[in-house]
Image (cartoon, rainbow, N blue to C red; front, side, top):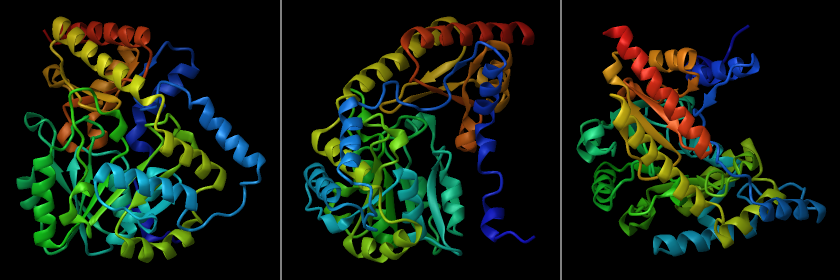
Length: 395
């Protein structure tokens, strides 16, 4: 039987990226003592008041169909939040609600790109970006992110890759997987390029509430000059430790949300009303768990760097935000993929190969900072011991 072209465009972009994670799960099922630091699950449960808000909404009958734009109360809350954070007037008709950032990003990309278009995105990138872009029919153009520039995307590198086919620049700030944050000057320079070449800027800001002390987050949404070309996507998955509720949104020019509405209505009709009520509470009251996560993740990243710098040849890139730290494993002579498989088999620690996020990170691996302190320290012990074993094998 024939398959649609989209299935060929997305071939190899699904589970293959999660090979080490899936293999670790198999080994755990077989009884192996594996410390899994692959996935970015929050290290706390969804706050009880949010769960109760969702349950209460269900008891009140908030289980009906929703609007294709999302529930009015949530959109009003997001309008107020982004008006305050951006310093601009963000109206409710500029907000659309979706089941999670992933769905919001899929809809947004489908709304700005198609076959014959190109989208620029930093390499490394979140693992689903290539699939989302290819799903639209557009071509992904990677822009290498360099460790010597703190893994921040360079406006100069963006400019070198803009062509008449370029439709949009996809930014992630704070960045997954590296934890970098774009500066105000970065945003302004990228914005000038977008204006000059009439490009969309899509900004994935899901880690906005997980910026570590001493760092500052700047959104392109705060720039009035970019008002007609910036689209922000985000959710409560990370900030409120609620990934399973799948509640996200986009904020965009009103003309774009109006144009996108038929696509949203074709896909779904907004997020579930009871989840929207819970999300409205989360947005209006802020996160009770984000401050603790920020403190713990920053401390674990520093602990990882201290341990590995002192007792191995591995190098750690310090994140400024988010749930992950990157380890430069190039001194081992292995690719990130081969290192991750060897560490899993011989060191009983599961990490993500850097190449799962793009070719720029082929000599790196990503470590989640989301396991408890004792287990994280044990993972450091195992990584160090494994590095010493590798040194002996190659001596």
